[in-house]
Image (cartoon, rainbow over all chains, first blue to last red; front, side, top):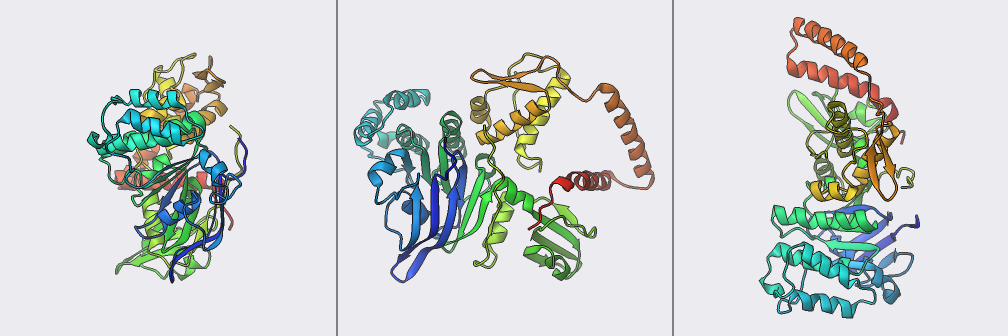
Length: 301
Length: 133
């Protein structure tokens, strides 16, 4: 598999009337990565994903998928992209078998054996109507449609938002098995962060249409520290490190910092920051601030 | 066959938890030379974790000389797994017990001791970790 990014955006922006839903978005998605796209509702996640799959024209900047424009060269690009929209829309009156048949007819590349084998493995009856399936099962059908294209890129828009915890696990398990099997690159958007740490290895956060955090999750977490100590001015820490969030009680100061090197001052108790805390801290921060973590050298498998 | 589990709240990176569980299983004889580790796909299926995490763990164990990957077949425990020899561990344990006795003598409770120990561990492992902006 080549090393060039599966998705590359440069100053990408989308405006609806006078307001920008997405602005100044520059990022790369590496092959084989599983990227979480995180942000509150209305932050621009769906806009970004739609631009990536060629739905809508950029108002500024550019987007490339597998080296090509997903909108101008849709015929060549989209055969390699699987997409599951929010709430996984399906035709409720079709049976599962008919739905798979639709997939077979609509896609130039389609692995019918894989599709049916997957449905069988999930314990579903191909004769059942889609409308009578549970939310989790419908999500799995939508995922099967996307995966049976044998795509190089899988784009999932809030795929588990409406699912119960078990269905969430099963859905994400299915996605990760596909990654393990075929090395497919995944971008999945979510407004819930807590479960993503075990599933995703890269993160992009969006706030008000701007990217704030970007990079490998391990690097982002390694660069940030929670410092707790006696009530103090953040100024001396801020001289060396970037203070992302500070809070004070009468006797105690808590700082979430992006460290530039080691934190040597021993008056601070140091803690790791988890992903959810990190995202929340940046979301509450000045929206203009951003950080892209350095990428380690790619390791050959 | 080993069954992995993950504690996402422990602060220990996921890949390292898998590494530690394999080391422990080999030490305890749950995993023996020649035994196969679960495939990446099996671990991903059971734990719903990123396959790269499993690969990272297995690569680390390979580097430590505990397992070897056979392309297209799987990952197996080697014939002579290199673990810290038992005599080394006994000496370390004795030192630690003396330290705990001294600490209690000074009035430290469990949490205070854990805090001191944690700082010392972090202090020695962070030399490779610091990054200059």
